[in-house]
Image 1 (cartoon, rainbow, N blue to C red):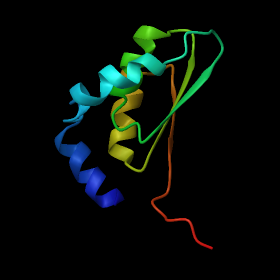
Image 2 (cartoon, helix red, strand yellow):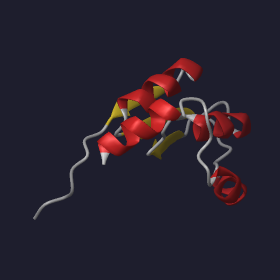
Image 3 (cartoon, rainbow, N blue to C red):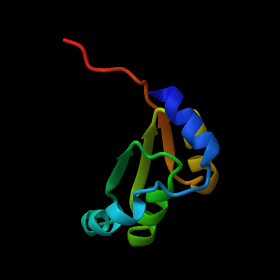
Length: 94
């Protein structure tokens, strides 16, 4: 799956995901407004959703996780005050 997303983000570095306009109106209602909260975006892609969340709560700490190194580089470029980490593309095993 990480190969797929490396290709996807190399072609769409600065774009919003195609379903952003469908999901964002529902998601934004759940962004906490308190100071000092940590918000983790699992599958953060290029950071565009974190960018939008920061407009709602600029006082939160944001952490982005993704399988794509390309996406994380794009996210870090637009959000230097956030933390980003690459996660492995593995399934849980018993």
